Each structure stands twice: as C-alpha cells, then as structure tokens.
Amino acid sequence: MAFWVGYDHLGKLMIASAIWFVCWLPLCVLSFAAFCVPDRSVSVFLGVPLAILGVCVGLPVATAGLAHMVKELIDTRDGSIRTMFEGIRLYSRRAVGLGFFYGFLLSCLGVNVWFYAVKFGSTFPVLAYGISGIALWLLFFCILTGVVVFPTLVQKKSGVFATFRLAALLTLDNFFLVLVVMLHVLALTVLGAVVFPFLVFGYGAALAVLTGSFYEILSRKYAAIEVLSSSSSGVKLSPITKRRFTREDYETFFHDEQDDYLNRGFRDFLFPWKG
Image (cartoon, rainbow, N blue to C red; front, top):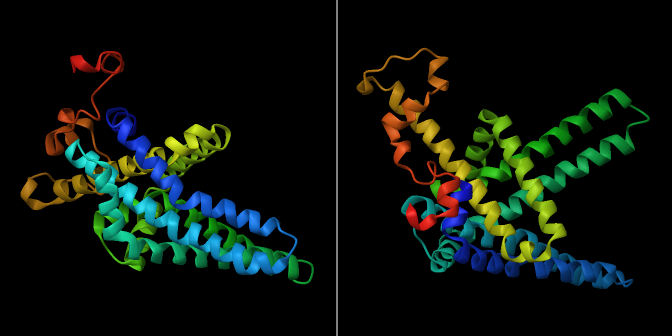
C-alpha cells in the first residue's frame, strides 16, 4: 500500500516533503550552529529556543499536516497540497502539545537512564542498573509509539493524552509489527542522511506514507475483529480465531480485492496506463 500511494501521488508528495523539510530542519541546523559557538550565552539564548522551535513545534506541526494529506490520499485516492495546510490548521495545537509532551517524556527518561547508571551504579549496582534498564526500555517504547502517533492524531482527532494512550495501546498490541516498521523508518533515515535530495524531497513523505498505510491496515484489522465478533455477523469465533484472519475474511467484509493499492503488481508499475 505504501509503495502504490507514493507511486500514484509522487509529484505532490515531493512538494509536500520539501515543505515539511523547510518547516523544521533549518531551525535545527541554526540551533546546532549556535551550540558550536564558544560563547555559552549564544547557546542558551539562541540555540535552545531554536532547537525547541524546530523539534517541538515545527516538526510535529508539519508532520501532522503531512499525515492528514496522506489520510486523504488513502481514503479518496486523490488530494492536493492544500490538504497539508488544512491539516496544519486543524491539528497544529494538538501537534505542538504532542511535541512538547514527547520532548518532556523522552528527556526525563533519557536523564533517568544516565543518572541512575552513572551516579549510583557503583554504590547500588543492582538497583541502579535495574532502574536505568527500565527507563531505557520505556524510552525505547515511547520512541516506537512515534510510528503510529500522528496517524492516530489525524484519524481520531483526540487530545494529546488520548492520542498518546491509543498509540501506546496499538504499539503494545502490535509490538513486532511496529518494530518492523521502525526498522524501515531507520533505513529511510540512513538513506536521507546519505542522499540529500531524498532528505529534502522524499524523506518526510516516505515516513508519512509508510506510517499512514500501516495505520490503515491496523484499522482494518480491528474493524474485522469488531465485525466478525458481533452477533449480527452470524459468525462465532474462538478467542484465538478472533486474532487470526484469512484473506477471504478481509475480502468478504472489507473488499480488499477491490483496493487498487493492494492488488497491483509489476505490470502496473511498467504500464500504469493499462491499469
């Protein structure tokens, strides 16, 4: 799905990715430059505010707008750059809230990982490294929730804490799937770090399409659970069967065989006009 969404809307996604890039990365570059200045006052009064603006404001706002655009592309098979700006308008406040919430949460967990291991590691090694290890796993888990948090925001339109709570539950319930998607995110990040044109014109859109498509498939899974478990469907399922679905189940209830994002092959890639 992610491949065909990107393939069908490549031009507008490249423009949207460039807008996403401009919204936050230049601020982070300027912040890094300020931190490199020997004068500490420049780092404190210029570097820190620029870093906060870039990471906690610009990045989440632009990502929410891009996630809203991808949602429209998946739902309607069409969309425009205007949809990205509409998403920014609709979700900017909650996106900024998520940015500061994640910034605070990750900072606290990171400090705890370092503090207990370094300050108390030699005095109370078992307790200190145990707490540090727990904080490290929580830090890793919070990073994983980032895979689904912005699609969750634009789909559910909930507040900051409700969005994070649902993203955390989805991550817990689909941990290994989220981990696989995170590995794809890391691969795209490495590609963006090596190939600058991709960083500008493709990286943001690739992340949004990948995570948006993943959320769409998850939503279909949970919709299938609800439909197949309901008494009105006339289907009785065992607890194990409720979580294992055949392709026929998805085709019967959600017509996946008619979804062109899921049923195209190499021939459609070579000859798109024959589709």
